[in-house]
Length: 338
Image (cartoon, rainbow, N blue to C red):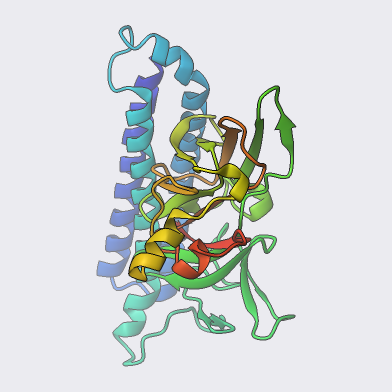
């Protein structure tokens, strides 16, 4: 059974997690130096990354089989594919978080015992880029493999970038092991005209954005949401790797030809506050599964104008100045995690 294989890798990740903890505790209790601790974590992180890669392969394969499994649920023992994928995603997130926690501790604990001034990086490594503090293992040129941050000094102040620069880092937190980035809105440039209405597909993330299955970054599954602006439009958000539908929402307008008055604008004019859309001219839904990339399909309902926008953004990012604007946003703040 395929889901039995997923449970095997579920156990594999737990085993790798135990290996990392034991390696760190053994080295630390034996009084190892910072460099030895870092080496121990680096070696075990390679083992853990192998487990994560195998897990990613299983999730991708599960997505391709999900229609078959859904049609044969009575024959398939265990949990439904969607629930299993969600649990698998949560375990991958926990594993990556633990890896970063142990790595950070390997650097910070030995230094804290010998100095009152807590250091956030290795000796000789940069700890900031512009106005952003960059702790180990993120520091450009001194990071663990795959963290892939670059300090672009051609701007004033310098900008901290992920991969090719599509994502602009505005903050790094070791408290919850997240990286806050500014990313673009989804590109829906290619619209297919149907007999009645239209349809289009946009993408978020992936290798072009510096987010790949070989790297450590995934969209935070607990801090982000999909937001859609438009009139009489239905959106489906799917995992790009597997095609699995994970969330959806629809936005309607009483008079599409007027380009609509945003529901947020109505709330803001009445109460002076707006931080959420409920389906009139805009809608939003949480993104429940962590991944490196997604694709979104928009389909018109009735006869609607081709005037729309979609973003994945950090919860709370939606503000009155954005929600009531006549212009759609071109970028959004997003939280990615390790």
